[in-house]
Image 1 (cartoon, rainbow, N blue to C red):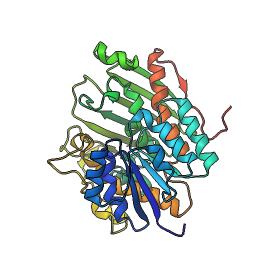
Image 2 (image 1 turned 90 degrees about the vertical axis):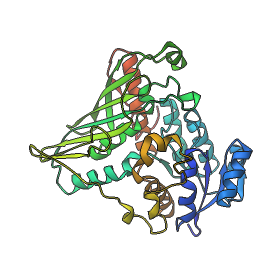
Image 3 (image 1 turned 30 degrees about the vertical axis):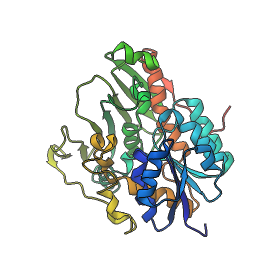
Amino acid sequence: MTHKVRMAIAGLGFGAEFIPIYQAHPDAELVAVCQRSEAALNKLADQFEISGRYTSYDAMLQDPQIDAVHINTPIPDHAEHTIAALRAGKHVACTVPMATTLDECRAIVDAVGESGKKYMMMETVVYSREFLHVQDLVHNGTIGRIQFLRGAHYQEMAGWPGYWEGLPPMHYATHAVSPVLTLAGSLAESVVCIGSGRIAPDLAGKYGSPFAVESALLTLADSPVGAEIARSLFETAHEYVESFTVFGDRATFEWEQTQGSGHVLHVGEVPKNVEIPDFADRLPAEIAPFTTRGVYDDENEHLSFIQGGGHGGSHPHLAHEFVRSIVEDRAPAIDHVTAANWTSVGICAHESAMNDGARVTIPDYTAPAG
């Protein structure tokens, strides 16, 4: 590519966090933003001096100046918006999850292949400082041979936009799935899941999902390692947490049990608290400061920050990986096949839970449809 990657952002709630990152990135240029509310759109675009402004997503896709679209629209729209952008000749970054059905995952995988464009799912956990630190511990041999992996994501979604109400817990599972599969260096092959507890009938009626908690066991492709995933979204009393634990034969990293208590590294049988460094030094100097700050402040915080703690400094890492994949003409780290597998884990897990824990095979997105 002979020019900077010309970016557009669709959805400016959580999506606004990426505006100054793309503006500062040495290989990117933010040329447009899109939001349905014209007043809110203009307010933010004025703040960041963005000239390209769209209230229509389809109209934005017709702009020939745009190379890539970062999608932060509501979950039910992810598949439609992704496929439309790919067919319009745009590279796509999309917030999680990739889609809401297996058919949508397959359609996106096919659309990426047909378009020749890059697709990246912007999963925050695998670029958080905690994950990057543990990944180093795996790579340098501190953990040793991985024996078991566990991921969990507990979050109360009351007060979030209406489409969240009653969402099956596993349909938003990538924050728990992604770290364990990445550390294992494998994709998920099959899943067994049980549903537990009950949510209020008015919530359960939205998606036909009665469960307060869903807990799954995964088998991994070409791996002797197993993994456990637990998720809750409503009416389950627990502090917000996105966590993972990796058990090794030399050491085990265990996520802190309560916020501020400290993560623990068990070396042999001796536990000790570990300090987690920041990884801003892995980024261009222009965007490195965004590992510790963003658009929102104490008086104007997005719910993902109130509950999510800024996603572990992951936002500039995600933007950098996506932009560089385009510049270098290579697959991004979380490409379409990986994203489809991670997303399908949750979809298949919920299917299993609704069928009394029957084993469900996860589709092989490396193979042609048919």
